[in-house]
Length: 332
Ligand SMILES: NC(=O)c1ccc[n+]([C@@H]2O[C@H](COP(=O)([O-])OP(=O)(O)OC[C@H]3O[C@@H](n4cnc5c(N)ncnc54)[C@H](O)[C@@H]3O)[C@@H](O)[C@H]2O)c1
Image (cartoon, rainbow, N blue to C red; front, top):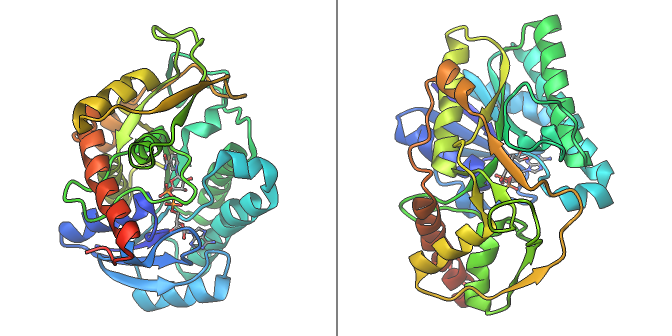
């Protein structure tokens, strides 16, 4: 296969590129490096470009003639989407629309996109299936839901084959430590806990009075390599005529923030400095995937998503990244 990956210089995109290349397929990253890193593009070729740039993207698709497109390029911070919704609708909605228009005009082929559990909103408790109400509570979640609506409309009108993979909490890093999670600023729990170990500045634990066994929020952490595998399966299934659909990607297991802190201490042997803060608005107590559809429709099951493996691989990467920052060295 020959696959074009938008956002391949970012966290999940770069791991997916490695996964694709390791299986002997060709991969091309299309990225504007706005939040991604050129050093993370190590697998396959690179085309600099913005997903909102119709002419440039069309030229790249015409040149590489990919069999399928995997679309990760996006703005990803919930908080920023509230303060700067224009940026989010522009990148996540207009950018995604541009990709679909290019595929319509250049020849439709499977499009697999990053969805998000953010489409379910905050009212969902317990285990969340794809049938749960779609009620995003912030602009980021709304852009992801609009993306799915656009896909369904393009499928109906132009025959675009698609799948939207709704991830819960992406976590962990490449098992060889080559690439990993690298957002600036970082808003995700595990890298922030690991950074606190280096900086000795406490990370903030928001809310210890939730109706959960230890009072902290429970989430479903899914290893980035398992996410990468699911994208390739989705492409393969679409190429064999699978139905267009949205699919949850999670383990079905919930882990609390306190359990993550304990696991980090066990893996690193270090005491995690943290400070308890009041609850943040809009954080549901528990968000865990019901992930049966991924198994039924893709034959996908998480293999690398034990909490210990997630933290070990994230720790391997974080040490490398911080050493590199401290010494101003390139990643090797
Ligand atoms: N990280 C998570 O826990 C998580 C959870 C659910 C969904 N997602 C979704 O997964 C996808 C990837 O997330 P990530 O954590 O790898 O993000 P990331 O920020 O690490 O990567 C995004 C990449 O997209 C590129 N990009 C951004 N705007 C672009 C544009 N206009 N044109 C071309 N390239 C552009 C960036 O430069 C970056 O390389 C996103 O769509 C995100 O919404 C992530």
